[in-house]
Structures are given as C-alpha cells and as structure tokens.
Length: 452
Image (tube, rainbow, N blue to C red; front, side, top):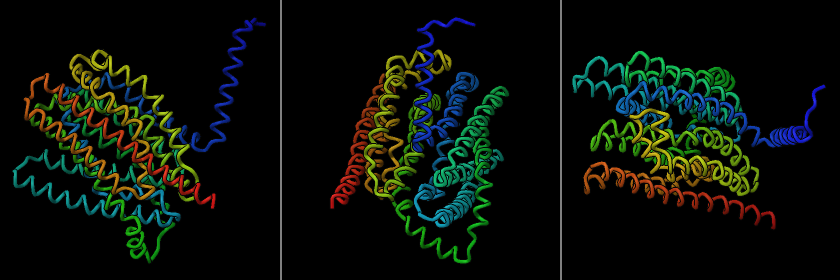
C-alpha cells in the first residue's frame, strides 16, 4: 500500500470538493451550463488560433495581412447589409414559425443584395478593364459573404433553440479550417490570396452545420400564407433594419474607412500591424465575450418576457469580465512590444507597440461587448445608434485630422493612436452607463409592478 502524507491527501480532498461544487453549480445553473458548452468550442477554436499565430505571422508579411484585413472588412460589411440585421431578431418571436419566417426572409434579401453587388462589381470591373483575377475575387467575395450570412443566421437560430453545442462545433470547425489552411497556403507562399481563400472556405465549412436543421425546419413550416406573414413579421421587427442596421454599418464602414485611411496616409504594412494588433487584443472578446453574449442575449430575452430582474445578471457579467481582463491587459499595456516581437517575429514589434497603446480601449471593449445586445431586447437601438455613430466619428476624425495637421512621422503615429484610444475609452464608459440605465429602468418597473 502506498503511503500518502496527510497534507497531500487534504489537498486532493479539497480539490475533489471544489470540482464537485463546480459540477453542482454547472448542473443546477442553466446560464453557466450553456456558457460552459459554448465556451468549450470557442476555447478550443481560439487556442488553435493562438498556437498557430506565431507560425502564421512568420509565413505572411504585415502588408499581406493588411490586404487580407481589407478583404475581411469588406466581407463583414456586405454581410451586415445583406441581412438588414434580421438575424438578431430570431431569438425574440414567441413562436418558432415566426422566427423561421424571419430566417427565410433574411436569406431572400441576402440573395437580392448579392445579385446587385455582383452586377455592380462586374460593371466596375468592365469599366476599369480589370483582369480575370479581379472577377474571380468578386465571385469568391460574394460566396464568402453568403456563407458568413448563413453562419450568422444559423447561430442565432441555434441560440433561440438553445443548440449551444451545435454553435460550439461550428466555431471549432471554422477555426480549424481557417488556421490549418492559412498554414498550408503560407507554406506554398501564395501571399494574401492564401489568407483570403482560407477565410472563405472556413465559413463555408462551418455554415454546413446549420444546413440540415434549416432544411428540416423549411419542410415543417411551409405555408401558403408565408408572404403575408413575412410582411407582418418583418414590420414587427422593423427596428432592426431601421436602427440596428445603421449602428452596425457605422461600425463596419468605420473599419473600412480606417483601413483605407491608414493605407492611404501611411502604408499597407502599418495597417497590417494595426489590424493584427487589434485582432490579437480582440481575441478575449471572441474567446469569452462572444459566447457570453449569445447566452446573455438568450437569457435577458427570456427575463424580459417573464418579467424578471436583469440587473443581478448584468452586475455579475461586468464583475466577471473585469476580473478576467485586468491581468492580461495590464501585461499587454506594459510589455506588448517585447511579447509581440518574441511570439510573432521581429517584423511585428510595432504591432506590439500599438497593442500597448490600445490595451485600455480593448479592455473596456471586452467588458462592454457582451452587453451590447441589451438595446436589441428593449427596443433602444436608435439611442444606441447615436452613441455608436459618435464613437465611429471620433475614431475616423482621429485617424484623419491628426496626421493631416501634424504629419505622419513615427512619433506622430504614436500620438495619433493615443488620442484615438482615449476617445474610445470615453465612449465605452458612456455606452456602459447607457446600458446600465436601460437595465435599472426595467428592474424598477418590475419592482414597482410587484408592489402594486
């Protein structure tokens, strides 16, 4: 018989009790259980990205990353326009049939949008006498947009149905395909085209997870009155295209403008460094924030319908995200440049310097981002739009006016990013106060109604 010291046994017993406690909490708490399922897939997906990032950044230059970053931003912009943001309305209707009508309606307007985009792209290419490569790129762009749209619609339908494991698997597939193909194409030195192909193929493969359920639901909910119901239901959720779409467009148009501004005023290499730094600092949002956002959206939609208090959950989310973010972002704030240089290679040192500057901005973005679904549930998109547009304007002004006035030498670039960062920190705090006011007003009305 092996002798185990009493102190060691007590440690094992303590760990066993702690694991049992965690298991009980997850089993008895639907919110934590749903979050754990989503987090599993997201965690695996992001770990793959983290592990392969040092290889990928050595296979591609900042300029090639910048070209891909531009393609990615245009793809997201078109996908946002294509659905008019109706995908975010899918969890809200009381009946599945009404939600699925919105699903199909979003796909129809996506097809119309892509056909118009295809025609405009081909006309532009003919007028500019572009080569065959341009037309292939346009076709691939639109295929990628459709795959991204279907992925987003399938994700929100799965949120409604609480198919969190399906979302988790789709995200893992997207990450494995994306990063695996990036490495493969990078080894063949095909440049930015390899990054673009990997991005498109990854969304096509992950969107397939939602195709079977869509086909099944399409058979179940067939109706002769679909066109009439579609008009009625789409008008019921008209705030999504009327208010949420402009908000999303302000964000994504800002991203495209920032890309064009940095490339025009500086270079593709600078934009590539900025884009890489921004995406690396956004990984915690994708790792934890996106999963939390899906579950939070589902939960507060239910709470609002059932007349439950939301502020306790709101406070718990903010507290948890603040505790999770403070250590990694403080480390990046002080040691971003040497970390980026060591992990990604010498050519990414400047991206690390930008990460040091942007750390406060992206830390607050990490905290606020999962809570941004609150205006969707409470019909406050128009007010939220004003805040979002103001934040976008401040960012664009910072990137345009500062180099125009004081020049674009290296010292001024650093000053420009400092100004943009602290302007965005201020707007994130304004956003947080706005979301707090919505939640407190809802809870106050619930408490008042209970007293009556």
